[in-house]
Each structure stands twice: as structure tokens, then as C-alpha cells.
Length: 148
Image 1 (cartoon, helix red, strand yellow):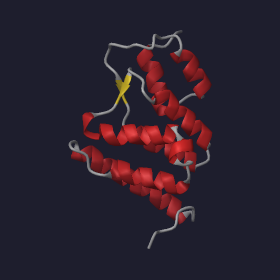
Image 2: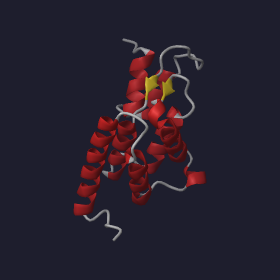
Image 3: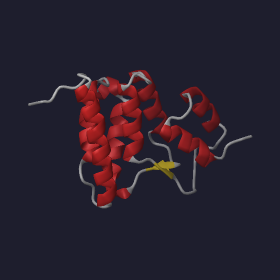
Image 4: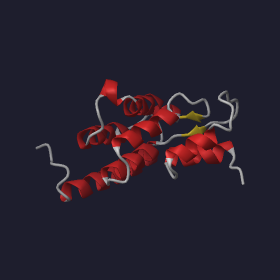
């Protein structure tokens, strides 16, 4: 059964399948797109970075994921955090220009994404709590050191 464009895009933003399969499914669709885009939320990036920190993904897989996302007409960001999300995806897609992905970079991205946005305070608060829980886990495991 063929998946719809939105289903494939959801699989991409959540990184639910190997990227080779997602890229192959995406290649069935025209590049130009006029419909309603799938929204990439900060929690999608946080989830992928958390899986990187857990060893589920390597830096190259995160880079390839961000490259598949970057500049797609059928993906977009909420207006309230568009600038931050575009910058994070750009940085993840371009480690040769922006620096390689490390625990410290992830920590910085978590901080940027937890900053209050123009709207949706509840979502931002929930995201901040999730980020703090993730960082706490890595601090307790000795992976992250408190910068004090």
C-alpha cells in the first residue's frame, strides 16, 4: 500500500524509518507542493537529538535527516518559532560549516528550543520540562557536566 505524502512526511519528521526508505518514498512525489504543509515542531528535533545522545543515531544520520527536511515546500514551522527552527535544521544539515554534532551542541540546541516563543506558552512550558528531564538524565549518567 502506498503512503500519502503527509504520512511519508510525518515519518520523516519523526524519523520513524531508515532515511533510505523515507527518501525513496519521498521521491514518488513532485518537488513543488501547493497543499497544506506538515509542521515540524521543536519536539521532533529534541526527539532526534535525544536518540543521537542515546546512541540510536550517529551524527551523519542526524545530518542526513536534517538535509531531507531543509528547504522542502511541503514542510513548515509554526510562525512562533520559525526562525529558531530554520536555524537549528540548517546547523544540523551543515556540520562542515556550523561544527560537528556533539553533546555540547545538543545541549545548546535544547536551550535555544526551550526559549519562550511568541505564542503558545503552554507548549513551551511542556517542552522545557521535557528538555530538563532529558538533560537531568544525561547529567545523572555523567554524560553532561553542570557548567557551574
